[in-house]
Length: 233
Image (cartoon, rainbow, N blue to C red; front, side, top):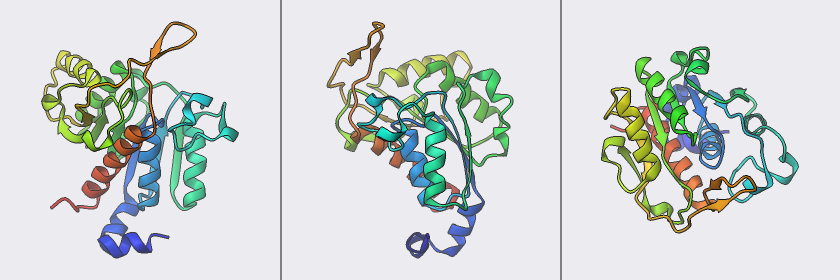
């Protein structure tokens, strides 16, 4: 099924990708597009973790979110979608919330790349720290809500980020763990165009359209794809 990708990067790179294994934490607006792109690009094993279920409010931007999927776990729904794309891909999913304790049991040291697309600062910190301790390449997505301009996204070291409240919070949390640089992230300096929306419990959630989360997911997938297939030289 990957004849056109092979024509672009060659059989040797495709054979490498078939043996590669990635673990995606968070399969929402960003992580779903990461999983989609890597599945269509020949990655052989994709594992995903997300405790959240699909809601109607997700239908505007999340690739696995369909009206027929409302109420299903996001990781489970994305696993089904990947299998429908290519039944030869080894797909694993975990419908659980990730924290430092959970990470110890996942054996992610056997994976070639860790991709963090969760929106919880403590979980992001734990994932980044665990990947670093196990010497696994990792990339982390910062905030994509309340924004409209995908062309402002960039790949950077977290120490160089600015203008992103989530990146600021993660930098502070990582600093407390003794980590100040060497953390690859995708982020945007775009000023928020919305203050978010308040739910029935008084919690403010980011407003969002498909453009920035989807573009962030594709940008992350492209970075991981090139690195794993040795195409960055």
